[in-house]
Amino acid sequence: MKGQHTRDLYAVLNEVRQLEGGENKLSNIFTEMLKDEINVLDEQQIYNNLHGLIDKYKDDQKALRLIDEVFEELCNGATLSEIFLIAKDEILSPTPINAMELDGFNNFTR
Image (tube, rainbow, N blue to C red; front, side, top):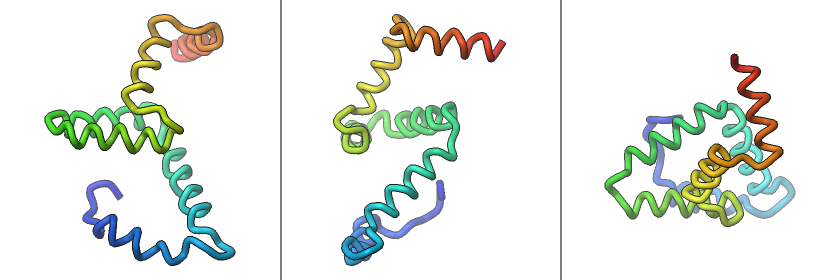
């Protein structure tokens, strides 16, 4: 899908809103599809894609705030900025459970 020309997002949303009720809930199907799309990617690819998106809009503060807001909605209140900072803290000062996971990962990749 990346790089393809798509229809106007708002127009598509309005088109599918009529399917929100009923037996086959649009919200359930949409959410499962979104999770499936994310699960197809490996961790490095997700990180690289997000890093590239942020680099692409680095000079557009409105776009960067929008990216943060989208993640805040998807992540139950955590912005992408906060997730990056927490990840940095975990690398610099791992909690015990993450220290064990990092040790295991580092031993696995050697």
